[in-house]
Length: 166
Image (cartoon, rainbow, N blue to C red):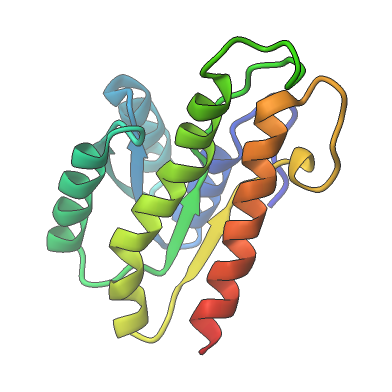
């Protein structure tokens, strides 16, 4: 499932999975955008539900996780794609950029996964895809705190995989 240039890979993955018969649960901060994606999926014969959620807010993640778990009997695939990019060097970027990048690019996936993973483990199945970036594999000069957060996301992915194999 290739992602077209300038597209949101989670958007494309959602459409692809819906075409394959999955009931896609869409999470994002902007309900209007979620409704647009849902309409696209349904126009192509798929099924989607929307769950507006600020993935930078623990209370919002907790509430939406409970809502999701109450509305479906299982979760087959979780795609963590929340992200933010601020270019710059770690030596001269504004104070607070690292914290913001970690909050959005790592903590959102970490907390949502921790809320939904027990259900997946209980059903003895499921897959989690954490959308990292080439920045998680190779540092580059203008990557700054973004690269740090994506290296951390890759580490989280590896630890998660190792932990779930037990």
